[in-house]
Image (cartoon, rainbow, N blue to C red):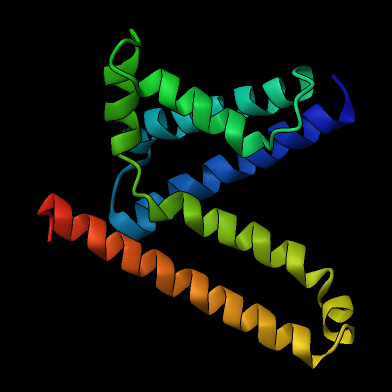
Length: 150
């Protein structure tokens, strides 16, 4: 097993533990109840990383994970009901907690370089992040209204 594979497995293991903890603390879902969902998500992520290493397309790993997740949960899949039920026990914000932590650690290593690029870039970055958040919230609001959810 090469170093890259070990890093992916180690990162996924930490992510799994973090998701279990976030689901327990934030949403009061027990470890045993969360475990199948976290396992499904981690297996999909691991397979997505494996496909990224094997297939010579220039697609990001998240694209492979998304495709695998869609295939696993689609109605013609023999495991779709299990995947849907298991993943349904994981609150959506539990994995986001870990993604946010990784993004923060990643950015913190390059913060000095980012600041040295100038104040204009910082303003542009803040505006882009704010615009992205507001646009996402607006789209979500419109879609949920159209679906009659809210």
